[in-house]
Length: 67
Image 1 (tube, rainbow, N blue to C red):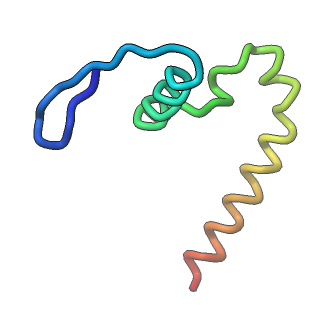
Image 2 (image 1 turned 90 degrees about the vertical axis):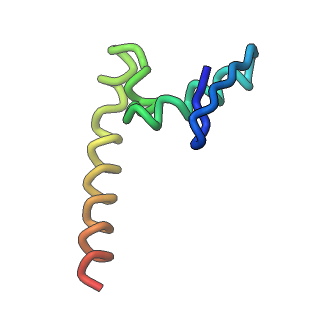
Image 3 (image 1 turned 180 degrees about the vertical axis):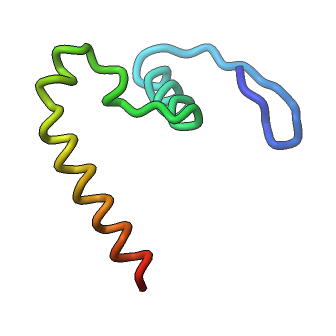
């Protein structure tokens, strides 16, 4: 179920890829990333790569903010 900007609510029943897409977008609204949904073992395995990506993205934000 979801609420539109005008306050109306609607619901959709779906499965498969569409359900995953809707959940992915709903997660974004709640500040949840795909990475957050990975099992703990996978998160540990990818931690170094995620740290490197975060460092790179933060440095790019600083560059853009300086412009």
